[in-house]
Image (cartoon, rainbow, N blue to C red; front, side, top):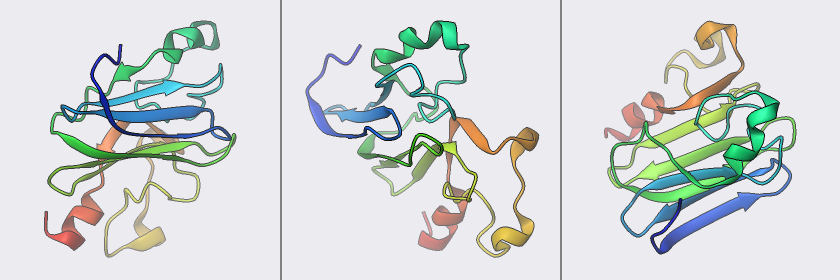
Length: 138
């Protein structure tokens, strides 16, 4: 449960989810409805529809073990995704990757060398965007 003072938050009602960062740099996500994690955009795995109400409470994003500065949510009902920017400049992404909007491919290969883990077009756990890290030298 989000108990600390919120440092920044964002939500995007079309995608059905929200994200926040507390004053201690912890990242949180939650669904705004029963389809708010349709593409894993909460970064907390994919649960059956019957368990969707559990995701409507703010939950800590466990994969991000460093302090976070900013949260962003985006997409539509058919392409929700979430991003967190950590204090070192690392970009963490989860959700729909249908149009490669998560940027998890290689910095040099572009779309030509792009593959999805397990053949899925979504990422249900947060992953650090290594292409951005390489470009920024972080």
